[in-house]
Length: 146
Length: 146
DNA sequence: TCTGAAAGTTCGGCGCA
DNA sequence: TGCGCCGAACTTTCAGA
Image 1 (cartoon, chains in turn purple, red, blue, cyan):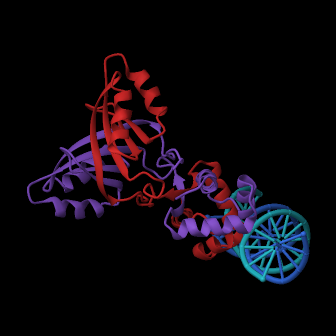
Image 2: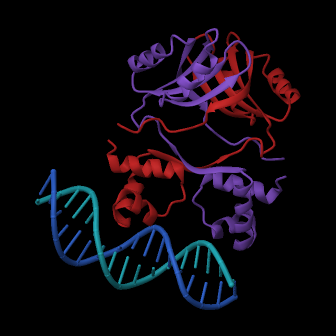
Image 3: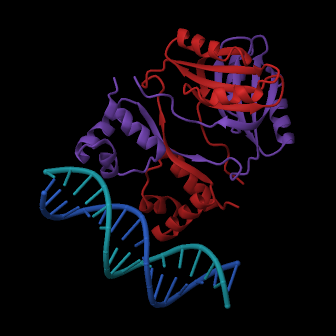
């Protein structure tokens, strides 16, 4: 599926998405056109979903980060899911197996704001809220050996 | 802290981190040098942490994604944290308030691999594992109005 | 490898707060 | 008066043949 060269390209871009073809070519010991072609196919195949930036929530005005476990009330699953998607402070939400239905990550400015948001969905779900104290592991790549 | 122009730049780059200065300038109705200066300061201030790519776990050979709640055993908190950081399949880990100590996100190839990894830390923590069934909200920006 | 094209950077000068 | 912007020219670098 992915060979070693592809993986090198992905690792390099994950570290710096603005690398030029020439710089990438230097990293993987290939010519620029060869790298360009590989890059094109990686995008085309959807391996690379997007070129994006990682932002500091604090600098954006969100000093608090919270993880919320959500358990939908009977018959409210779909309503809840739509409600969650419509809350812009939810920057990530997973539907999971087990006792909980969803796990959502929220960026908020204050505890009060967090409380308001949770009250807004209290008719669709019971919630269990955790405040993020630290991030021992921040978004990183898994092993690329496949 | 951030004015409307900075926010436009960030939103545009979040959507496509490879936009040139000229293209960015077109979006925010400024000249290239002005945008270059703003960009430099956004990086310098740490608002932009990194230029990176978003990858498809499936394409990388990780068909399974899991969220694990971890509760450290007495006196094992620091050992556990070090262990978690050393597991490459953990692509994200938060230290949180409440009943749990950590929430980790794992990319794995099989359920068997997941089991192996969890057994590896069974001497430091009790775990509660969820399998991600869907992602109603994938990584996105919070409102940039601050 | 080469070449045209486009990129980012550096200047002086202007307008606004 | 200082800060930030503009527009042009320069230099380097890039992508495509």
